[in-house]
Image 1 (cartoon, rainbow, N blue to C red):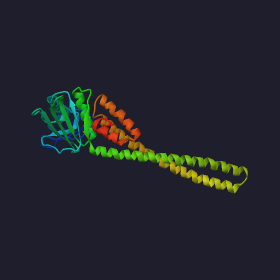
Image 2: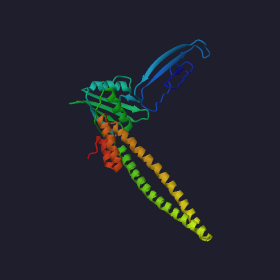
Image 3: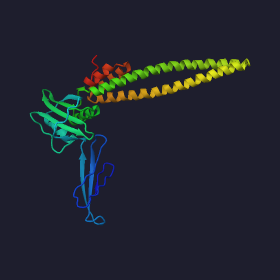
Image 4: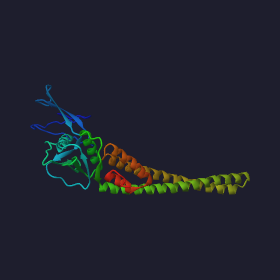
Length: 303
């Protein structure tokens, strides 16, 4: 039996005459973890005497990606940046940070490493020596993965300030669509607020008219006013439900925008990271989609 433990046990019983088996471990996120493998060996299933073997195995940070020898498909999105170190240190980092059966080697002051995620997504990391150190290019269609790699490599190589250039066309397209939704929901919010204000004023006027009719003992007119008041009130409730639904949709869209901004900021380190967050807040308030897209690409608004 094998027990793999990061917070759970995964027992594996070997059938007769088999000397090897496996246990599937599917991490949902990239994070370093320690696996404690405990193997119990006995001559017979009902034996009371067993041998216990323990093995500790550490999963690297990007445990959802494994290195492959063949070149993977070129993703349409990428981020590139410079680190003040040599190519060999980048190769050492890749060996330690990803699942690999052998060390990443350099060739002609270059590194090319190809990975495949558990979901089948390709990831390419390429490093080339330049005049200031090493230029690193991370190619992946997932903005979150790119941001994780940038942050982790900066920590590993002790980089405190880092600018980058990026191109994420699919993410930019989705962000533009989300910003259009935010604009639409804001327009609906303003319109519904104005309509509810008019309805509230109408309710107050009808209450006063109904009360005047009651004091004058004009029961038919009082009933007409209360009937109309009921209809207006039902309309207000319907408008409130629309406003609540619109508000929830607006918050969901703004949450998506904030997630993209956070990931875009994590493509940078230090002052550049803080600048992206601050500039993005101003751009969102102005509804400036072009500035937000520029922040993803260059870390600056372009203005």
